[in-house]
Image (cartoon, rainbow, N blue to C red):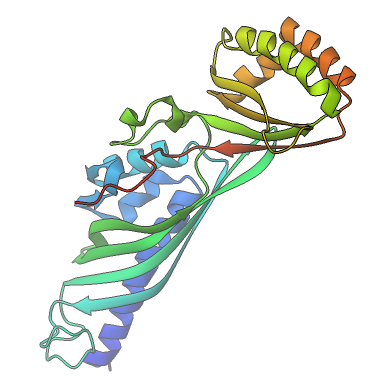
Amino acid sequence: MTTPDMNRIADEREISDVVIRYTWALDHRRFDDLADVFCEDATADYGRLGVFKGPAAIGQAAAGSLGRFDRTQHIVSNHQITFDGDGDGDGDGDGAGAGASDSARGRCYFQAQHVWVDSYGAHNYTVAGSYLDRYRRTASGWRIAERVLRVTWTDGGPPAGAPARDGEAASSMMSTAFVIAGWIDVDPEARAELLDAAVVMMSETAKEPGNLEYNFAADPADPARVRIFERWRSDADLRGHFDAPHMAVFAKALSKAGVHGRHLSRFHVSSVGPVFEVRT
């Protein structure tokens, strides 16, 4: 014998399982399995990525977005489910129709790790937020009828060269570039001669494909330090730069300058905006 409470618990568990199946389908690149997750007329609002209707279109959107990464892992938690049959609508299960409804709404947290690997090693792009859902009971069981993704925070960025999302295309080539920045310490008496060689090297580098910016400059507060800032479109362009003839010439000047310290880092740029926020 089953009771309304037992039916409700079974429905909640099945809905939670649908939400979890969604994450397994994404992370194992089984996008066809989304047909067992979404209703045939379901919609998914993925924010700036767009709004998609039907499991096939939703799967194509997910495949295009996640295809930039080598591995992903989506984790969901803190599920809250409210059945439309709940009399008071507060989700506490004391309504007369609790557990008997064929539609429900829910929300849960998600945190998605996106890993990509290049010649510098593995990198992580984390996206965290909430899924706001509507569910429907079908002949095949509970399915997601509507999903709205809301991002709360991110850390890191996607691979350089990843397509800009809507609204980011106007942010110039920075949105698809990476930056190398740092410093080199040389003998103070040799710095001026090194910077003379750097002027020639900078001029030639500016002609290279994929170079967006390249600058060596004297640190005004440290007589030994040379500040470096570079911006490149792709890793292949950077590799080509090191094979260029003018780099071999500059390498000799650098050796002659007596390098005794350096620190350079690569920064991947996912978005660009004004220095100060514009508030309206």
